[in-house]
Length: 532
Image 1 (cartoon, rainbow, N blue to C red):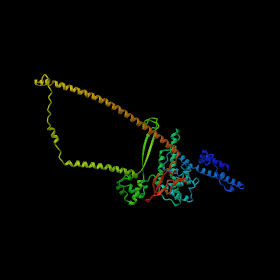
Image 2: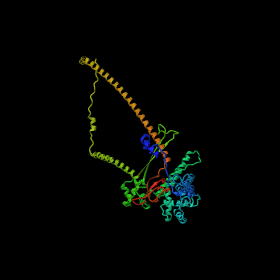
Image 3: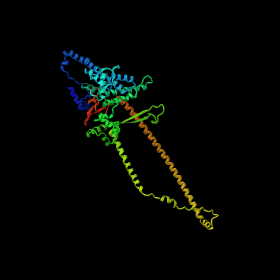
Image 4: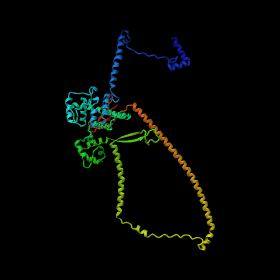
């Protein structure tokens, strides 16, 4: 009690103690704080000490290591793109083995992924009905070699995945029991094809970095076929089929009316878009207005990609000058637009060009309308009626001149001398003015040269700063690309036969999302790469 009274007295009388009291709540200054944790009484009780230790040991020594170990061994099987590492190894082996992969071989390798094997993926299922339904589909498709023994490409799960992929590309109906399996395979296919593209690119980089002749790089045809197969899988279309079948309400019967038309030779979607509105409507006259509007909406959403290439030599004064032995960096810029945007611009440009052409035709018609008038013949007569110019007489020498003229010259001699003196003075003043003008002009030229030199220096400094900023930005982009994971969902795509819900392998990722088209017919798929 006495200590508290003393501290209170110090806080009232001493300024430092008062400041400590106001800041820290104690006249002596900051003090150590203590916290207490409330626990149930039975945990602290000495009778239950052994039981508490057993519970803690079971939780931290058994359950926690088992949970962490199971999670670790599951995650170590997958890569950063949520693809099984075994699948990546299979793709690497077969891509290196077959340098030039055609479409048939590519589908065979794609179906050999371990994601379709029930042993490695619980979502993949095998049913007893597959033994009867799969051989029936093989006979309907035809062209599948079953005698070749090349595991895992000839395993039952791989054969099933290959058959279901081929039926999807051929737009064939499958039994209801296999529809779920087909949708599962199609959902996984875009991510697997992207992994195959990554494998091909890595092998190409390895082949260029090594100088060994035995290490062969995959061909660019294999890479192109992978990209084509990704589009074919999304649209459910075979390689040799017409691209117009991607549009709604256009089937094999209607396709003949479009592609075999006498007036319009339509072989691609771009040919159809480039037609005039009236010609396009006449070509698709077999469609109703509502269906025609749906076709036009889908047609305008198709991509139109332009590529801009800029080769340059970095860290060089003249980056556009490429010499022998220099390291060339190629900057490629891809610009994606829709068909509707591109051809609207072209139509507006064509309309603007047609208007002056019509005006020019009107002027020509005006000139032609005067053709009935008789031609003027005055041009020929004018040359005849020209008068001859009078000849100038040469002045005679003073000895031969008449005496009257000589007297007049003598009388006017003084005037002539004065005029000559004035002319000489005028010439002198003019020469002085010319010299001053020349000096001022030379000074102006020197000033303009200095200004031009300054402008050139400023331009060079600006160019150097721009190049330096570009280098810094490129380095920052590379660092961000290494550290950050970007979403690979790119753009919405209209699809007729792709599954309604396409998700990537991760449970917490929605992956490519597919929305039902409001206009009816098909789906709008957020296609791209299904990496989160």
